[in-house]
Image (cartoon, rainbow, N blue to C red; front, side):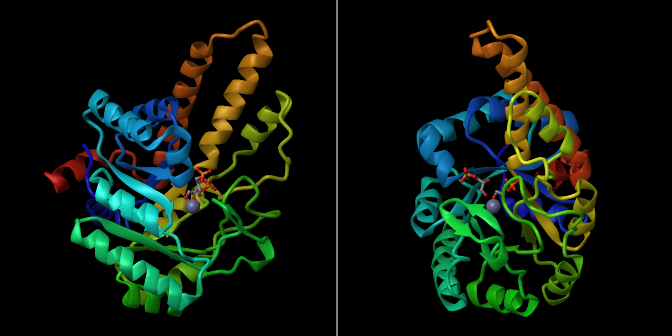
Length: 316
Ligand code: G3H
Ligand code: 13P
Ligand code: ZN
């Protein structure tokens, strides 16, 4: 069942986080839905502009509708990830999405407010909610390259002013993460002092953490042992910090890279070990099962595992 993102946030706020996973193809959808059934967890499926272009808009939407039909017990929301103004309007008007993200974080504060306000007006008129972003993460965000050293943490007072002026329903904040596999140098952690300060100024308001993959070391080592050339210093978010962030109002946690790592490890190992194979279904089945296992395990760390019944009761 597709529900609104707002409904999921209402149940989760301060208690657990909803995992938001990007999808691009059928195998990811199968693993995502099967993993969430195993964990009995609600979730958010998110579609980036890149995914809409890669699969084609009718195809990516049809994959999600088909998964909903195949797994009627799941409860999830559908979200546009890192939208620009036009893609937000397209999704708002399509009738398929639960919420959109307008990412004008690269713009100056006033311009970001102005663009976000326009999207909020259009979205609210159709019953959708809007995620916005201030403060820039490091790494690569769609086509915007943010140099690591220019990435800055969100100013809590700016966050409060932005929410008040833009009317957005949730806010992506820069709290130490970045997109991709190379988030941290050495032992680093989330900036809990910043999350706490934002929550103090915006109590009850859902915060979003992008770039939340944990980049498991074992995954990187296995990929490299099977011919990959990932930098072994790749580091992600400690998955044991996710629930602590959730308690402070981080209600949506975006994870994409970890799924790509599962895909890469499974395919590299499979074709290394079976060099004569050219049927893509055996390896596809392994990926679906491994991705489902990853999703179920991550749901435990987000605290969303076992929460399906509570969400079902709340949306009934
Ligand atoms: O934050 C971006 C997501 O990882 C989506 O990536 O734009 O390559 O689909 P993508
Ligand atoms: P990662 O790819 O670093 O997990 O980030 C995902 C994300 O923020 C999608 O918006
Ligand atoms: Zn992101």
